[in-house]
Structures are given as C-alpha cells and as structure tokens.
Image (cartoon, rainbow, N blue to C red; front, side, top):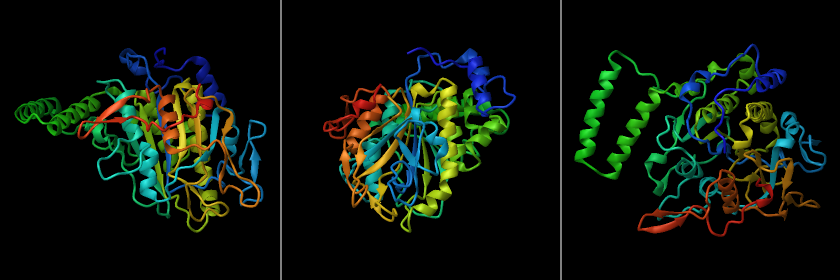
Amino acid sequence: MPRRETSLRRRDLLKLSAAGLVSGVTVPWFESLAGTAIGQPRKKSCILLWMDGGPSQQHTFDPKPKGEFAPKPTAVPGIHIVEHLPQLAALMDDLVLVRSMTTEINGHYDAKYFLHTGYKRTTAFEHPSVGCIASSQVSHAGDEMPAFVTIDAGYDRNDGGRLYRNVPGYLGPSHSPLLVNDPNEGLENLAPTGTDVEARLKLLARSEKRFAKQFATPVVSAKQAAFNRAVQLMQSRRSRAFDVDEEPESLRQAYGKHKFGRSCLLARRLIEAGVSFVEVVHRGWDDHKGAAKPIAYRSPWMDAGMATLISDLKVRGMLDDTLVIWMGEFGRTPGDGNGHFSKAWSTMWAGGGLKTGQVIGKTSDGKNPGSAVAERPVTSPDFLATLCLALGMDIHKEFMAPGNRPMPMVDKVAKPITEMLG
C-alpha cells in the first residue's frame, strides 16, 4: 500500500470547498509535518462510533412499513433508511448496512464485552478489545502517536448500564487506549508547564530508568514504556491533532457543535496523524420509554457528524483505508424500541475498502416485523472477524493467554461477511 500523503491534493481541497466543508483554507493543518511524515506505509485504520445503551434499528437503519419513522429512499435505489437521516441517505453509495446482527446477549455489560472482544465474558481472564488488538497488529511500533484512542462524546438523560472499558488483557498494558475525556478540551496535560522542562524530564527519565533496572518486572516495564510514550507525544508536533479548534470554522460547523460531532472531527484528525484505532463513545441510548422521541432529538447531530466524517475522509483520500462503524451492544425491541433486543438488529459500515452501496441480511416482515433474522445471520464472532479482516489482520493468529493457553484472535466459529470485503 502506498504511503498516505501528508498534504491534500489541490483537487481534494476544491472538492472540500465545493461541498461547503472548508472556506478560505489553502493548506491542511498538518502540512508542517511533511518533512517528518509518518515515514512508513500506512495500514488501514478504524473509527468505531459506539452508541452505548443499544440504539433502535427500526428508528435508524432498518425502518419498517407503518413504523414510527417513515422509510425514505437513499442514493441507492431500493435501499431505505429513516426519514431523520437525510445526509447519510445521500451517502448510501459509501455505506454498508448490516441488518441481520444476532448476538444472543441482552444484558448491557456482557453484550458490550461480547461485541468488543468476540468472546463471552468468563471469570478466567479478560479478552482484549478489538481496539487493543488493532494496536498490537496494525500500528507501527515506535510511532509518536498512540495506536488506540477513546473519546468520550458525552451522554443524554438515559442510562446504558455499566460502561465497558477497553482493556488489552493478555496483550499487555502497552496496548491500552489513551482516553480523551472531552473533545472540546483535547488531551489533558499535553503541554508541559513551568521552566527547565527539558532538564526536569531528563532527571525524571534517569530516575525511572534506575527503578526499572532494579525492579525488572512486566508492570514496571509497562510503566517505563508508558512514560516514554507520554514524553514522546508531548514533544511531537503531531500532538496538535488533539486540538479541533485548528480546523476552519466552516468545517467545524458542518460536523456540528454537539460533542458527538466534535468527537467525529477529532477522530478524523487523529487517524490523519497516525492513530490506528479510535473509538467514540456516546452514552444514553437505553430508551426504555420508547425510542422515537429521543432518536428524533439525536438524529440531527448524529446525521451531521457521521455524514460529514465520511465525506471529509473521502475528499481527503482517506476513506478507502479508514473503516467507519456505527453500532451499540444490541438493538431495541421491534415496534416502539422499549426493550433490549439482541435477536435481530443493525450496524452501519463505511469506507475501509468495503464493497459499499449494499445491505447485508434482512429481518422479518409480516405480522411481527423485525422480530427475527430472515436472511444472512451475523454473530458477534462473525462481526469481529469481518472487522479484523477489513483492517488487514490475520484472524487465525493466536495470542498467549495466562497459563500458556493459546487464544485465537477471533473465535474459530466465526464466518466473516465476505460479500462486503473488498
């Protein structure tokens, strides 16, 4: 794969301008990095948009006749999504809708664990999340930027159960994610304060090195590695990627003022700067009083943030090697969306070199529309295998878990969705 360019081509800037995404911009934010570019061929990256609590499929990407939201045509003839997502409907050529997720678990935390790892939760050990796996498999060792970043995109009034925290498990702490608590604030404590920063860092580094030499344990080694990465990031010009206010006002407006839109913009900047996996988490989708009203409220910022992210990646020449996925831990009960429903629900995919402009799977029609998968069931292991393959990973690879137990990256029962892989 050729090296990703470190500046936009002229025609891409013209496309951005024509699309209303930029105004008066002549160079991208990272042009000053051209002389110190990433320097290695870029592997594929992923942005996971996680709607914590379980979004309703019938109020988003799998509308049914006589449902609370009317189905509306998209840019691909014959494919409909709900009326409240017009910008995404216009981008259907760049999307894949998987409408036949069937994942067994209706409890929030266990379902989040299952969808992030591809394995059911046990008491023996914790499996690594897919972001941590990506950190270990598709990032460049020694890169200035962290391989995996999570962004808290805020929440609304609803609950979503216990929040899942990505853990590297037996991959080791070096593959833990870096957390951004607020996309508007960027990364906390990134800029050093006070005087003689260089001298203080050298003094601290000597102390850390002596301690690591005296107590050579995995935990101490991990701490030393984390210290080194933090210093490297503080000194890197690419750390500017965490400041979304460097983007032109017109582009920030297109993404939207909501934290979700700002998080999508930050995710794009991080991928552009070399991060391999970004997870944006918006909490509060556990709509037990019905999904229609809260999703109608969320739809404008969700539609704007996601559509602008996909369009922005595309005109920058980044969409083919950036996989974007929208999902939660399950769907909602057919009809009004009051309850948890893992039996038949939807995810949305874009980019990543996928065969887009299509729908995978189908849910039932008839008396109880949406109550079961009618075509092409997709399980959690199937989902994880497809994601990993889309990023170029070897899904047959095994890791060594505690007790010298070999653990496959992906459960061997997985059947990847090959019809959507490029």
